[in-house]
Image (cartoon, rainbow, N blue to C red):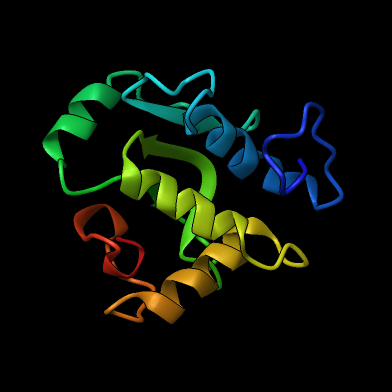
Length: 139
């Protein structure tokens, strides 16, 4: 994925794990294939679904202040596990994805998000509930 999203063909010089952020960003940006959707979800191929009752539209409706949802990672070095990402199609959701995409790609995407969050959030702890709080630094 080139940094220039207007390019016809994307090439990925980065770690392949970054592709999910670029794909979601391209989907939600004006003219993207999901530009008119309420949101977009990324599911890694190795994600194990254990509850089929989760309604993503209901989750989004129940948390109108949130724009991005991810689970916490079991590895304490990372805030989130990016194997599942739900991003609302609004200015804040796009801002989160853009800020994440702009990070140093010499690290994995989970580490980059953790550093981004800790550098800019009002609560620097790893226990910060991303889905319950906004990211005022991106508004």
